Image 1: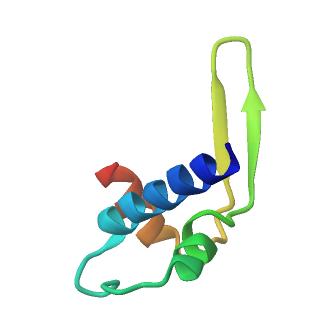
Image 2: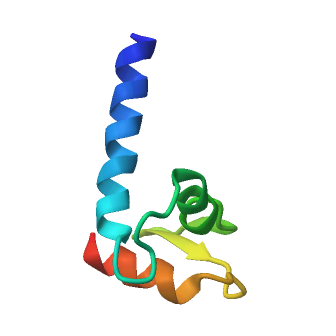
Length: 72
């Protein structure tokens, strides 16, 4: 079971690496992708009608994050 989860995680990161790759970020290691796009301060806000994820406005790689988010 653990091996299957590792394979799924690896494949998801490879898929994300494909979406991240453009001229500036070709060959970016997985650790850098995790640092730039997964380790972001945020807060989950729940109201009566919807759930929102509010990200920090001081995120250094904010423009890159939203470009990739739009591609997904």
